[in-house]
Length: 156
Image (tube, rainbow, N blue to C red; front, side, top):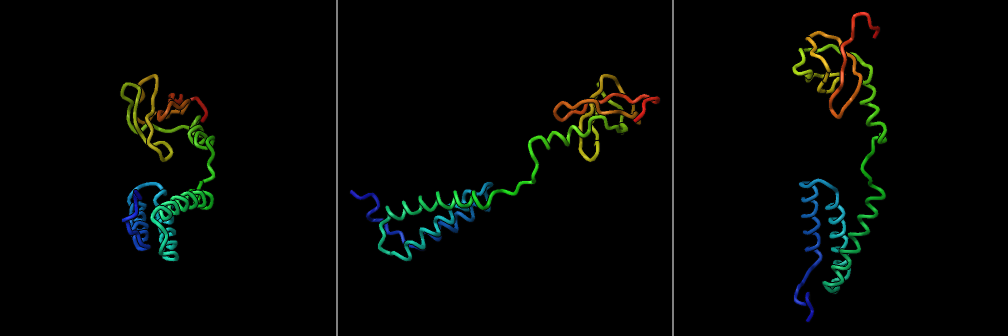
């Protein structure tokens, strides 16, 4: 018994599937539905050119076109990279080491949240610090900057 013998899939069925895949591409993250849409459109063109092709061959063509469009798409349409390497991400954070800032409010239990050079950080100190105190970043733990008070006689 032929599983798909009574199914009559025409070229416009594939094109409707291609349009539905494009809608999914717009709604869901990722880029996979774009390549499936290209494959469905290509399968539709095959059926348009050869109208008597069996449904099994249409599905095989769709599978082959799916793989081809994905491979070609990955090769030529890679996501834009900023050029940042893995080391660059931490270098931005480590550039804060040794920098100084002034507290905008006093610490509570040695902690306070404030903006430091345009980013919001939790500042942590071993001692309670007052508003207006100048502090130096001496370490980083995750999203927490470890700070120490800058004494009046310390050079920046």
